[in-house]
Image (cartoon, rainbow, N blue to C red; front, side):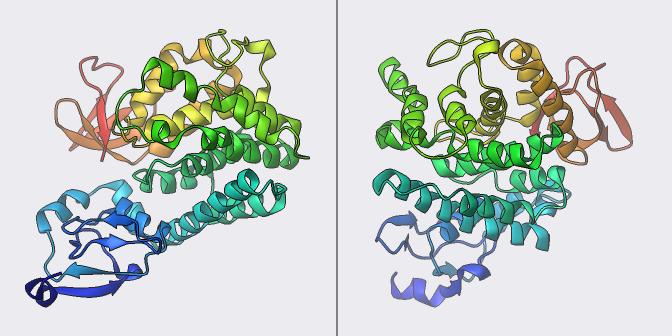
Length: 366
């Protein structure tokens, strides 16, 4: 940083970082890897990233970028209101710490052939879940950190949390919920044996690269097969890309051949992947994801699971502010049971029923 920048900058602790602050000097982690470049405008994802890499302090300019801050903190945004609660801040801190612990545990299993400490891993997920009042509240919290970097263990943690909530919705026993939570956590562990340059590729994969990625389900099973853990966890790693119509991989199994836990993990996996940012695309609007499930999901996914999931998941978007494809903005106030992806939106003093307004659709949650 030059002398002029030093005059205009101050050093802050990471817990003092706020959305809209502008980074005044390149930020590196303890391994001297560049994390953020000078001039970056902090948003929730960036701040979470700094915590994840254990950056304890940074320089920011004294002046703020009001325009960008205004974009990130739109008045009336329900998600932004959630992010500003003490509950979310506690949830986010637990989440960031747990991601680091999960990464460490995965690496020990892979690199040191360590035993899988089931109790320790479930304590990690329980710690996050206890920050939420109920399943819907946890989904609201997860929406608040949707901009987190796309890393295998972050996605795995999300799927694990979703599976835990899903298991409660299905009225599973506590023992089965524990196993299902673990299945969600380990479902993608095989990706850690796929070349990293393919996993983090910014553009569309080639046919050859995609075939390599598809090997992760078998690799995951191979990693887990000799560990003394529930067999359903191992089968979930192997079969979470199988589909009920036989269109999945690695074996093209049909519904009656697929482990039920794998069917459940598959739904959580697809939902989280589609509603999260990826290096090659932005997050897809959750209502578009629900619509996609409604259109062909009942062929690919087990109806007795997908129906419960969709009916419950849309409830987490009640009171969210959305933007419609005509540019208008409103609040989700009621879900249509027969068309879950097309709720009733309050736009000003008007109520817009998307089941009757066929030209309108939800473009984004804001």
